[in-house]
Length: 545
Image (cartoon, rainbow, N blue to C red):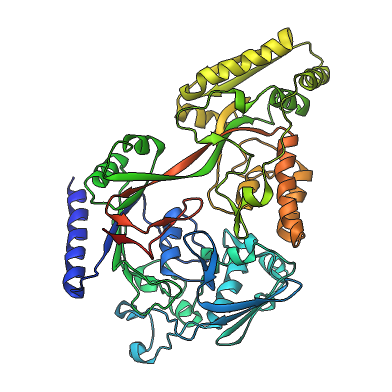
């Protein structure tokens, strides 16, 4: 209780201090809870949602996304692409600067750094950042996303020096990026935290503490980090020197660490918080509250996950048979589901300047076919040298009735050749069973952690820690690897579609319905733009009515 009071007191003091200091009519202060401290705000290694939320608002890359998800200028005022799609030449603005703070005292050896440090953001800052991003020593979790750049993969594997990366600053205002292979998704990749600039002089001055504390965090975006009370709160102030495609509206944004959703919901209703990521349950509870609205994105696909290491379910013919006897359109849609799934990859994912589904279309599936299902089931039973096979679906109460209908359909079609049952358990029990590989078939979800399609497809690669299916397939692994390292131009999207189709054809996961995360927004707040997969929120246009 005392800790909560102290936290609220700190926020109140900060708010009062800000308003008194600024004394302007357009002061806008927004408040948002986060579930944990970001730990590290180094863009090249930012991994948690909290870190990416702060980084995406405090840094600006060569390009950025607008509220429609379209590419717009960032630090680069213009760019050209060679006819073969391999060379990108960016012309940088002359009026973008790093935010130099008094709190950096002690970081720089020069005591007069406020007067002597050159704050202009240059092409060399991006050259240094991208070389850091693919350097094996940096150990960036997203380095693979840059493999389309010349020599990036070889550098990341330690086979080449980082100076050989196809990123070169011709001068302070010109950056040339040479790709190994054309990639129509490249500009969108450049909007990721991974590609934010890094000033080499400041980085070296931090002595390996870059992004670990306020005084080691150097921002060039629409906001800058002004305060960081570990495990308590963070504050972003508007960067008055920011010059970009959009004007920055909020004076400040306050992030209060709050792990208790009940408290978060209460403060949303009181309009103490202006926005927050909330669970489905909390969103439903806020549905009738006229002071708070909830927006959602389709970032999760729930369906039948098959444990490919199970003695029965490792048989591809049996899995295919079950999928061919399951039609999502004939299953009653749960109350909280958004729609029937269009494929394995969630709808929030994007490719180039489009939603992935818009670019790739609805994913091809095995389709409903009772006759073929019976043939495949008998084929699978022969492999098992058995006349019947037993299967069990585990699910939560939400899907109990639907799964009973599913197995009744299976039994009607296959008769005594199948013995099927449903076991209902709590969400925690189901999660543990899946984690421990203690299941045959589970009704669970594939959730996009980012808008990158390949991040979702990676879940299915052999040996991946998030591969709950225990699926191991050299053919699929090669397609995934080729998407990152070999395919170019239109081949990349074709490869992504092929990977998704392979998963469908081999019945690894049978998609049923889409679900979404929620962002709750108070009635006073305007102009807040969640990213496609809801991993971040852009506050540039944020306001208060």
